[in-house]
Length: 266
Image (cartoon, rainbow, N blue to C red; front, side, top):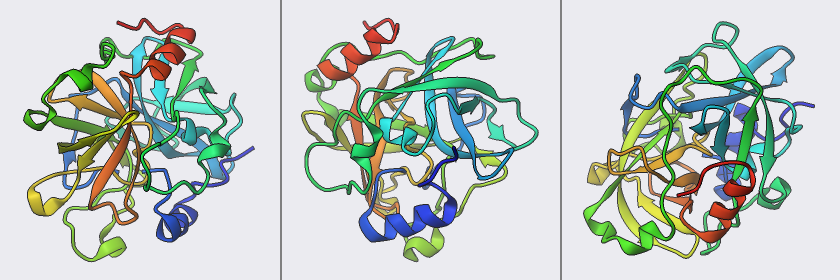
């Protein structure tokens, strides 16, 4: 079964209609080897045997990658492949097979817009069949970490393989595909607000901020320039130039789900 919702053309159509979940890095730069534990999720959803990016994710142990539940919409759980190269090249880069497990039914996120305060429990893991060729891993936050901080004095580093844009003009016409090869990029986001289950960050180029876009879904948001992953990319505006809303990893549901999947939770 191939991915049914995230082909390049269909993703743009859905986004234009409803700012749907599924978000690349905007106003950022190539990550290089700064975050080797951030990987790209791929599948042959358009052409059999040709594995293209559909989401991003982050290793927290040698064989467990954390991503968003909505990334598994339209994907057979046992048909997930991952790569950790700074530049993913279909047909060239080595793939690691894995099995995805969503905390909730991914179908519940179909057509979800960026409005409202509740993102749902948009979290999943991919259990890899073999150890990833990575010696560093992201760290998880302690319970309620974000609620305990003066977040106005912090920024967040987001990383992903998705679409890119270099300024806030021209709306969707300035979004670049970042396909074949897919570059792992990063950007720095200021704090905007905190909700019970989500972290809202500013991604507007006019204030010097970067952000996320299509294909960055499931990717990490690190506290400042640390390796502490406090949230997952979930949703934002349709043209990738305003606020991003991200699922918190320091809340009870996320912590309990990760622990149930064998992830050490601090």
